[in-house]
Image (tube, rainbow, N blue to C red):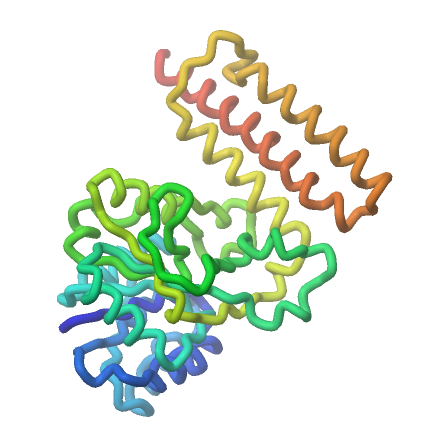
Length: 317
């Protein structure tokens, strides 16, 4: 087997038929072997029944897997364990791939002999997004586009996003898979479910191991945006949780702190707040919202550093 496409899903069986239909319509993929692994991440809907029907409806190789541990990282690791392919591709059930997507990825692997490949992710129907979601915020909805030319990514601030990433399987084994302490849990609509960072950590680790990552512009997918992702609460939560996570993982020792919180973080909170107020007055609430997200990030850091401090004290007792 050359490629396993790992489709992680949780309680979104209605998304699977469209996702699989686009996978079944791949072109120029006759010269290599590939399969689709649907990983049911402990769903309570009819995901298994839908997957079984799709196995009957399409001629492509589809396997159904069940991962009882909740979390996207668990689901991806499950798919990787069950794959015997040389390459594993990760997408979600809300992804629709273009006809030449799979061949573009495979051909880039062969031509560059690289360890990972990432492609473009377009937000589906951007004209329907609320006005306060400006183009510079599309990345929080999974958008990824480095232009029309292929190039070697640096693996630090240039790496694939989870909706369209492919890795040499032996590299996932070398890294140990995705960190199961990180990544979306469940639907990702609640604060305790909406933690990310596992993809960033994964590609940083791959880069540390001298892994080579390439960008393939012809590997294009569309990302279907869900209703809860079009609310300001989603963006606030995403940034707040990112702040919490950055503080919890920060190994620096700071000399000037209060209850474990570096004093400069308080300064960042106040600066972000005054910038937000200024933008709100001069440009309106829509244009100021991005700065409101920054406030959330720094408040998340306050909680993260405070939590780390309390955990350290409790450990000493």
